Image 1 (cartoon, rainbow over the protein chains, first blue to last red):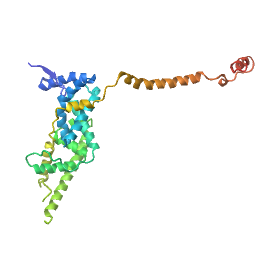
Image 2: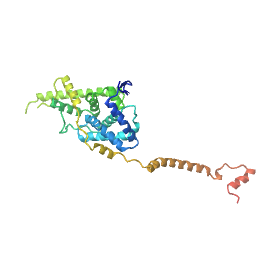
Image 3: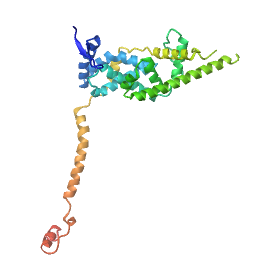
Image 4: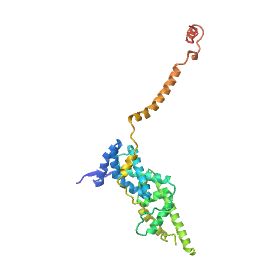
Length: 203
Length: 101
């Protein structure tokens, strides 16, 4: 029988996985970083930078914005290392820090321009519809976009979002409901606009 | 040219948007120098002297104020003391108030 480890989520014993090795490799780096070891923290950054970029890339389109959110995430993690409790993997804690950073940056920004970056990578299938959907999203308030991207983009549950943002589940549900209503409203407006344009006489 | 590029059917339209949400990703990877840029922005470690000064100075100021207040109370002049009654206490009162050489 292989080695077993206590799952932090279910509190049940389960077989050791590669991920457990990663989590345990973080522990000494976190301990050294807490003591002010910048080299150890640099190693933590290199171990988790791709994940943070991937998460920040959900909410921002331009490279400089993703970079800013990612840098801010790690800077905040450095400042708040004292609050990290080793009962959960460091990656989970860092995810929370990243989400809160992205959320704060989004809220502080003025509404995004409808001009999408020239190098926007649209999905190959139905590229036009995807771009149009992107423009719809850009019209929504930052909070709505943030929630919809976590619910439908990351596929997280209400409980996961509440846990990661430090909100109550009721709060998440209410905000998600409002976000979906606004999205539906924008979709309806788009449909009306399209019908109106279709009936416009050609010049 | 029609501006609405989404499907006409509302449920298809919603599915299209949800698909766009799932695909909504900048696809940006960190470059090799990202960690170095983060480390360069970390605040400098406080020197022990600065650490002590920031913490002891306010405490020192409070202590100084308290001591000054206590000194003020202790150093009140005899004239501020309640006046002694006539008779045997009068001599003591006069001595304290400096009336006698």
